[in-house]
Image (cartoon, rainbow, N blue to C red; front, side, top):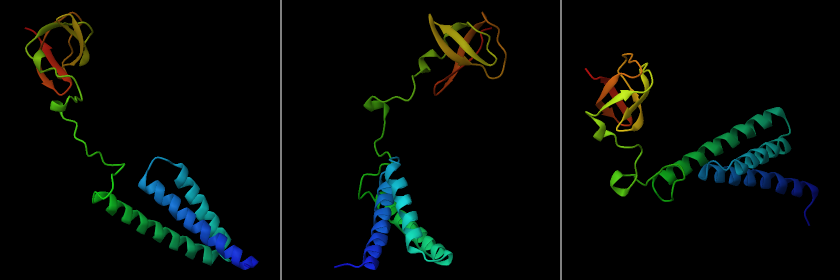
Length: 164
């Protein structure tokens, strides 16, 4: 039969073990928040119950922090070696030939003539072949209604100049 002191020891050890397990889950699967918070609370309660003085509390806290750092390093190393699927690192490549695009392709607009339907200071809206696009000039102010031409495309930026 366990005495009062034995039950207290079991409670203290249980709180620390539970805290480390829950924080380990949070480190392995970030973003859940619940296990991390519950683990931190468990460790804090464990420190308060275990420590008989402020000096002991500081020492136990430093030991807990050291263990958490070691746990973090082990989990990072484990995930970086590919032994488990990392919830942080995206390994799939999103390529255009697979059907993924990050933005529309505007290269076919180069050389097209259109009209500024808003003032370009330096950005605004232009119409090319009855389609409106967000456009930009390279710093020059262009009035609404001015004839413009696309002379450069950088990613999803359509850069225009006045059509002279």
